[in-house]
Image (tube, rainbow, N blue to C red; front, side, top):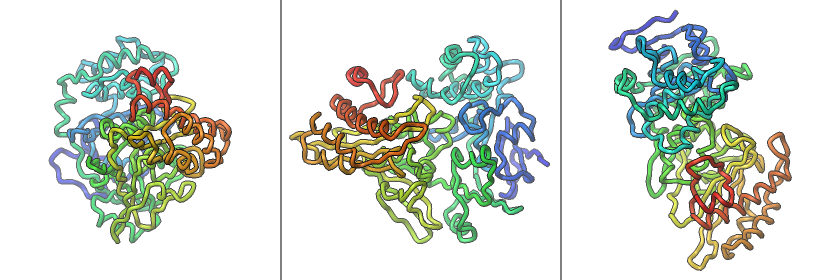
Length: 501
């Protein structure tokens, strides 16, 4: 049975879940740790305003707000998918659901804006949309039109139409009212996520030090790692398979590091939304890829390490990071070792991680302003879709316009993210001209033998990959590290957009 704990009470044993739900501290000791927050809210707490739609993080109907540390280190509200959060992932955190927004008789500005704009019809999607608007209300960085699209692209609505919903977002975004939610933030900073429960054949551990991690791995070397849960949680919600032993790395603060320098360090536990903020001024190609990486709710939970360690051939971070010459930093009880990120992927869904070893992060050299570099993603939808082909490209050219370095990495073209070695060789030592690029594009036919599937045929993928190289030449002839237009734009720009961005 659940029981409520009062503020100031001594912390419970770490095998008890403890988090703040709508202003009340909750302790739970009798639930399976792989229970999702969505199921807990609806089935245990009776908070049915949080809806279940897809149960895989696509529709946004289950969106709630969790207080996390923002890019400036201050606590901030973040909209996330409750269907993908396992209960230990909110250990020590504050969770807000749609039921808590109304204060007395006054509705929250996000609720008022949705009603005023006529942004709801059947209402099923409305609570999740309101929770995305709730986050937008307190964001101070919503300065571009695309950011409103990004804020809402993880919320589907089948009947209203998006214009009135976007009107509601425009009305409240960044208004930051001095209300009870703002007043509560300073005291809502996340606390320790320490957790360890092993019963009925199921293990879930969130260590907060590496010594604790090594000890757990010594006892359970076959345990699986989880951080954001945007991929692994689907095994529970869609395949109904419960991993017997899970170790969450989310409690290891060192993994959340994003450090600027001659070589930037991107911690494996850093979320994609944190990386998006960090890369905007430091790594434009990475920032460009993250724009259409996933919905904001997913970017708040998905991590650098999660995207790399799944070793998917269509993962969006590997191509751009490999093109930038990234190095993987691995750690075990024995110490650290480094290897080129392209060597980290050893086969389909396989990495070079050894038993009892974790990915600490990746080191990425800072980009000289004259280096030509960009990233591309081609998919059936512009937003919230899986790549058919993705690419990261980097070319350095001498004062005499001769190519001195070329790194062209592609996803969706092989069992792993792979560099186009023949195309690179065709460019090296040649003048950076359209004719040389055309020869390199043709040489790419010797680099890949892509497969055909529902996202694209093999000939389509081959043509797209070659055309991306041609587009890269055209785009970087204007700006060495091109950014996306502030309005509607895909990562593949038209000739007109290139000339006028």
